[in-house]
Image (cartoon, rainbow, N blue to C red; front, top):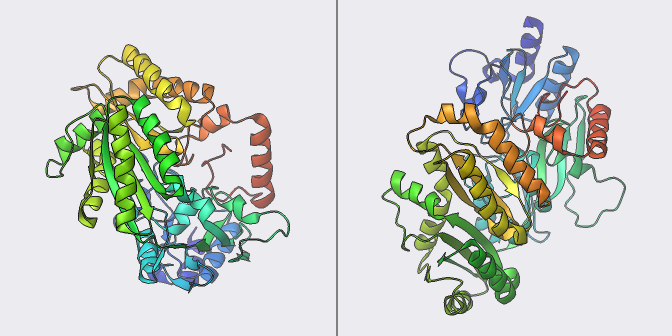
Length: 468
């Protein structure tokens, strides 16, 4: 291995091949569930350096684990504990290469932090709409490798829908320049879509050309308290009919989820009294007056119909940010409460009320006192259906005793509804065996054929997404 390490130091500079000191920022995942040990953390500064690193690892039959901001939730971006994998960190590659306002595109490197890209677009009077809780530290390469979702999928789609072209280093160390800014290009297989959502198993995304959108004249945010989850779905239907494409966000929060926020972050204001369910709506419109009138009209109808029994509309940008902060603090409050079973599921919106009611009854019968933390993106059918240990039960004991059985029950019900057991977090190491069990043999066969064709040595992020 010393020959490989010497060659890596020559390729990227000795200062960017890390072996000593505390490397936990690279070797431990965000949830602290996966603790790996890398042969070295290598931090290339350019696409050419990435290609050189990949070629060296190929020559030495050493596997690579690409990593962006290390904010993933399924263990897909940290090394295993063998001490034989190279952790390839893209964090130095942060450049915004080009912003084309007329073409409504921006080309950025994989290590660009999402929030920095959002700000660059805003400075140009434009919008990059991908938005998620980790946007201050997650990177564009990781967003694309996991096909990130977030809070505005309802209007703008997942990361896949926001990407027009990619630059990728292949497992052979070659560079594919597919940084097209074209909306229409029917010239064969769409190679871009192979790499989006592939979690670093087919190649290393080094740059991307992304769609920008005109910045709305105004956005308006509101909270509504609803008596049931059926009422939340009815309010979503009403909002879609009345607000059309202007509806950019529709988030769902169950009572206990917000109670955890109140417990662990008591300084955060909660402007509505506790309710069985609370939804957050966001509307984009040409003017503030139009946005307010439209949103208040929908909420007024919802109050009259009984779909909501209380509502509040943000009066300022600061209040709007505070409402979003309330929603985004739920995962942080859960982390403070202790390790939990995270389920990132997708269902047809019409199936969600029945699923939530029936699954809640099932899980409470299996584990008396279990605490269900339900929240997520109701507008696109994505629930974060998380399971917290009963009060007073150590979280580690709860996971060890119940995680496998409870996940099986949840996933069986999700699949029976025509849903997915991974909506936006990906597969990684956490759900690798689940994918092998639940994906159709035909689909798995095609996926393995693609992996074999592009990465015959199996050196790109092995053990993630597809089982060896």
